[in-house]
Image 1 (cartoon, rainbow, N blue to C red):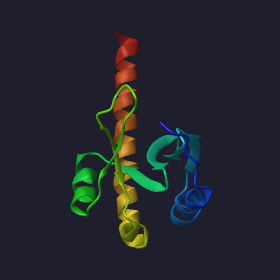
Image 2 (image 1 turned 30 degrees about the vertical axis):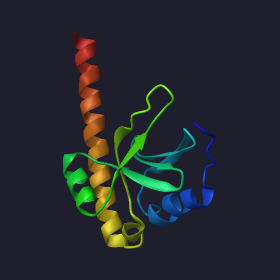
Image 3 (image 1 turned 60 degrees about the vertical axis):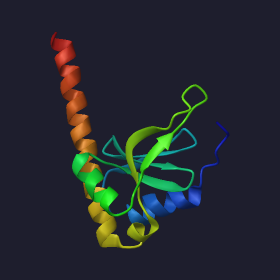
Amino acid sequence: MGRHIRDTGFHDYVVHDLLGTTPGISSRAMFGGWGIYHDGAIFAIMVEGEFFLKADDEGRRVFEAQGSRPFTYTTRTRPKPVAMPYWLVPGEVMEDKDIFDGWVIHALRAAALDRSVRSTRIRRRSVE
């Protein structure tokens, strides 16, 4: 896997311009891109100049119906593409604030659900 350069201009556009009115947004550099968080829960990633939102089953259906695709990656030891639960936000969605905000709501719900499920698993393990 080659070295990736983070596109700070794109990062700033998404985080500050598109998500700037949403309270609790933060970002962290990771794997040559960024993880985007809402109140500490990751709900989006930016990789190689593309923006992906987390999706549960409902969000996946919405995103897929609008021509999105999942984020995939390969490694030297894993040459078959591995799909992650993050879906590409097409440019036309990013240009329409109402549609974009709807996609973000789906992603925030998916992140909150994922966080809740993980929290329940941790509590169960500590009780057992």
